Length: 288
Image (cartoon, rainbow, N blue to C red; front, side, top):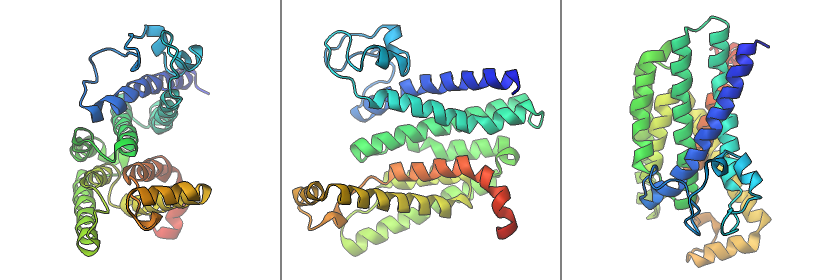
């Protein structure tokens, strides 16, 4: 393997892990209306500030044995998990751009801008997924910029990403408008809110970044994986499922709300990572 690719790979892994550490801050503070830059990282229990070495992604948590160095309160394993997953996904997103640069198929600035843009998209999506899972809320500060940024990136790199700015704009309109119609229709028929407005804004952003052709696949993947998750949760713990439904005054788990944002993000990232590999295989069958 090209030594430059090895160095770039290690750099991207470290870059992704550092951003994963920052995303942990975003996931906790943004829903609580707190600044993401001040105060510096600290233990939420004892309030003691963390030394730099305690903030090293993944390894800091492991070195501390998963406990605060000062008050010994356990630190959730989700923190290093977010850091590790972000690092792995950052590398997966970066690889096509790194190989394009190393092979000479892409100008260095195009590879750098493309990789940086898709990393920004990735980091926003990870934050949205965890915040929605925790709070049933998708902050406008994370979702609203996605369509505009997606269209802007399409202006710069439409050829390289396979999504023109016209398609990005159309996909944002179709995705957001279509899901908004579904939201209104479901509410009118059932009297309950089936989808939040945050999901509408998120899907508009996914459409702008991934294009019109991605929307059916993203929606199908999100819906199927959401149903599988709900069914698995009910089967693995039926008493807890019935209790959850009863605690909300509902007749059955059919009416228990699940956040849809994490599954939209999952479907969107799956499409981003897989479609470039699968398109050459599927093209002979679908006329691509």
